[in-house]
Length: 258
Image (cartoon, rainbow, N blue to C red; front, side, top):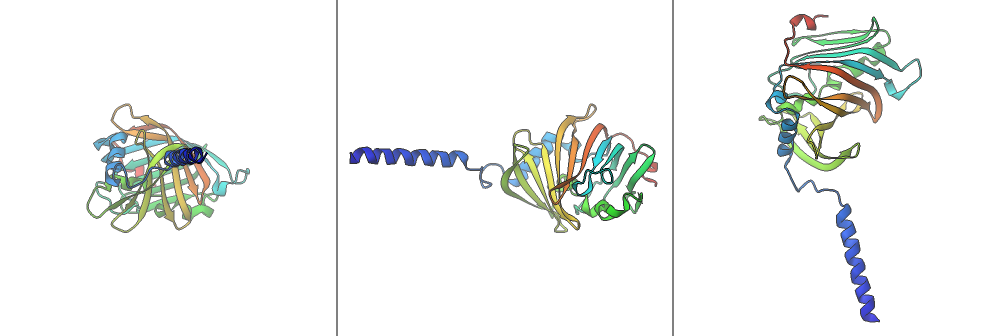
């Protein structure tokens, strides 16, 4: 009888041990390093073309729900939402505008906002509806994603954090500290190595984005997420759908004139 009990206890210990090992999350200390993960993310997104692009144009539509409010006074549908980008060749700050960039948000002929950085100065237009959210449109509260392109250069620190998941996809988590000591966290899909999310602290709350619906550009080796969801303090503010995009096509300086 004693022998039977000992056998049962031994089996149970083995079962619980196996269950524990089977459900433990992957340890950040095993597998690829932070730098290797970023290298895989760059390769999956298009390699050198993605890491050192010249221009990017995105056009589509978006739903704007500040503070998550969906009543008629707050929720807006932008049937014309666009971004024009000339990329910088150098960048040591994740929270500063660089290169050239322009965002347009319109409802029909009504301009909700236009945000422009012409490489030297910012020129913005905000409608009366947009003015209450002026702080949320500042560059320092929005820039962050592009710093990954420069994280392999001197002066950057990259660290692997505990693995996590985004929408059920297991992700590596890598934190980039730029030379200005600004921290940006990236979530890299373990299976396809796409960038699934980015997160950073801002003056108006903790900001993170979720990227999905990835598509390859028809003319160059470049992968673009065609859906982007923006959150502040865990609440969704914007849902963007990029219906078309062009990479490395000529972009006139006049695009960045107010």
